[in-house]
Amino acid sequence: MKSYSKVLVTGASGQLARALMQAAPQQTQCVGVTRHELDISDDCAVWETLEAHKPELVFNGAAYNLVDKAESDGQADALRVNALGPARLAKACREMEIPLVHFSTDFVFDGHKRQPYEETDAAQPLGVYGASKLAGENIVVAASPRHFAIRVCRLYGPIPANGATQKPAGNFPLLMLKLASERESVRVVNDQVGTPTYTPDLARAVWQLVQNSEGGLYQLSNAGEVAFDEYARTVFEIAGASCRVEGISSEEYNAPARRPRYSTMSNEKAHRCGVVPLRDWREALEEFLVAV
Ligand SMILES: NC(=O)c1ccc[n+]([C@@H]2O[C@H](COP(=O)([O-])OP(=O)(O)OC[C@H]3O[C@@H](n4cnc5c(N)ncnc54)[C@H](OP(=O)(O)O)[C@@H]3O)[C@@H](O)[C@H]2O)c1
Image 1 (cartoon, protein in one colour):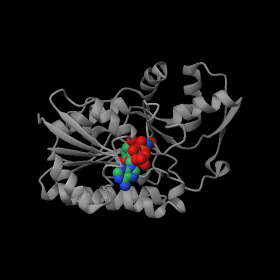
Image 2 (tube, rainbow, N blue to C red):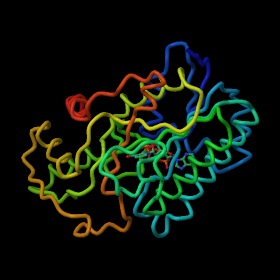
Image 3 (spheres, rainbow, N blue to C red):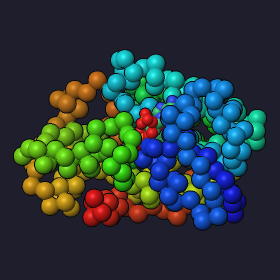
């Protein structure tokens, strides 16, 4: 099993970045750099930061995650942060012989399958965000066999009061709780199925993967799958909120970006590399909501 004495985490105020730092083994020193300290698309700044800290491993927690905005005025930022940034990191890390751990998304798939996607399935993103993330993962994996690209999906986890995140209310369960405090019913899409994933569970699995594996493309999520409307009902049921959920189609919801109807991902490859299977999404959600 590999051990790392010092790791650098970019996008350090993000949900997953913080969970990765919290889940680090005791002997590992984590240096987190926020967007204000390192813009990953700035080539000089990337080299200077790596040279200043000399980490043995880099986690890239930075991303542009505004899926709908990426279809219009966010397109350039999506490509800069999700493709150019990982390219800068991947090249600098390769030349300094540091493995890079980058994160991608289930939105690289078109959603036409009805059983869990494997890493080897064709990626066919439906929108700009998915295309920018696919470009990033391809660049990272091609840059070095020691680099990791890990697809994750539907993240939620603790967000501190001053925590930075690009999403309204931080993540889906928190957004649903906010809406439940303001109204009697919510309309939520009923035709997009995937796996809600709890960042502390994911972070533990990521550490297991980087300690036991050699790099490459992987997928990690909690177990099971659910459509968004049922996910919202489960949040309300666990939290004891009386808000009603009306399931509607993606066409009725009419978001700017098309999303995959089905994007559950197989974790088998990671399991074969020593990652302990993550628990069912509902059990993880209960733990999260009890603590909120
Ligand atoms: N959240 C999800 O549901 C989801 C689903 C699938 C895949 N993923 C992937 O999982 C990874 C972690 O996502 P997350 O939810 O933890 O993201 P997050 O909470 O939105 O955090 C992203 C972080 O990146 C920072 N950032 C943005 N542009 C940057 C730049 N140019 N240089 C450096 N930092 C920059 C942001 O800083 P500011 O806040 O200051 O802008 C933010 O702190 C990402 O690769 C994401 O694409 C997430």
